[in-house]
Length: 398
Image (tube, helix red, strand yellow):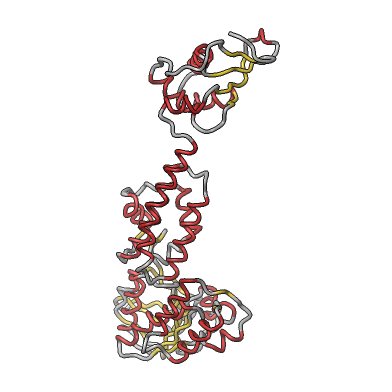
């Protein structure tokens, strides 16, 4: 044993070509210590890792002594050296040790990471080429960028989040609806597979409620001149600011007092604002972005119970036009009239909002303008958005 500077211990032998003979517990602890790129590790950190692995301090000290004697580490001791209390180690050849332990190097981990991402994103690119949901395309692009940029994400977490991106896309394609545990089962094969951090990541990127992934039962929000009955038991919405009812309960309504007009509003803040001043004879319904299948089925049931013409108010953007047309189609199927309301060229021109169109918006505009039945007011709005390259949100005026 020799010293290489004040308070440092190091074996006189070179770095070995093979691992020391260790029992399973110490071999696992050595692999734990050798992960990462740090050449120097403190005593506090190493003993904390040992404790986390259920290894006693005495056994950890024995492993450290073994590594020192066989030439794998140098060890810094507290002065005076006679105290024999070391406070840090330095790996003499960490890459060699990691190769012998089967631990991938930083370069190998980076390459494996890129391969994981490339494989998943090649699938995603193919999926995006056929999707017609611009909101989801935007969210998937954001999720993709998030994973490409997060270099500190552990491989197992990366794999989970890549699976979640694919799970979101296929959940949407299959038109599935359900609670969060149902989505977890769909994406990862287990209702408890997602950690809190994974849910926070999903929430930061995706509108889960819009995608039919509910924390709780999906709710229909109503206001105004509407009364719903279940076997002659009636709820009146008019005395209230607004009323939220589970979709499955609304689908069981067996009688209603029909309003003179339905008014559907996309933006939640706008809905709540208008709910305070609903005109007589108007039933107000919040339209949750791109509605789920369950919400659309509930809408059809309401129309069957209480047929009336409709105003539909969505954002003055390509997605808003598409949503208005999709929801308005339910009135057309029922032989009822509908019209866009407060989402046309005058509102778009008057607003100070200058939100730029993205690639998905531009592609959707081409699709919308190719529709022969597009309402004239919506066609004029789409042509203006295409010409000036901007869109707006209805909260700015409604």
